[in-house]
Length: 275
Image (tube, rainbow, N blue to C red; front, side, top):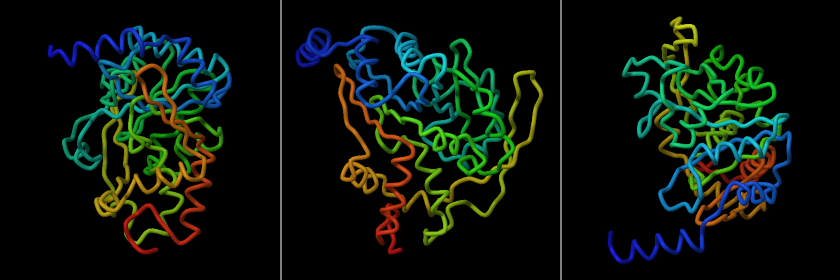
């Protein structure tokens, strides 16, 4: 370890460390109340300053929403590839055994007690808390993983707080739900015209073929997350916070939806084309 890394580690350990209680206070400052729905995207960094294991942070987040709330995370079984590329591999999503590739915190959450997983072949969500079963129910029945019949729509109706823990704004999958609502404003199709099929293995070991639409390569190429992020900050919707050496982004699903719709209504867009 270099001298610079040694000094940085000492600074983080002594000056920029925090525990679960400090995280709880910070998410309260971001507006989270007991009984709320919290959607978390995360990246577990070696020098995040958290005094504890990923399981301890998961416990703190569960405490933050409480038994009457709902904690949600993504659990896609692939990384650094598109949904279309994942489906082309022909691998099944095993709801009990396929690990989440959405970061260590997500995988530890997946394995923790009482967590349920939706049966979308491309974008399964994890849920813990009150009505977790109702939240994930039906995700496997809609070919549109982000559509109005998906759990992502329920994040809007519940006015979930979306929290990024050392994760970039581009990791927020709720953006795709908003894109689904605004698909008619795009110059290219949001979804690929090809209806894909994926296999899901349920908790009882039964295999199910599920049809799904994937986001088109054209839409993925034209999306400009930075434009949307800057707009949400300008609108006072997206908050940037810090606890210890961990950076947080926080915003409400309803506020994000309304602000993005205002952006598009103004004649601008977060896709790189002239509306």
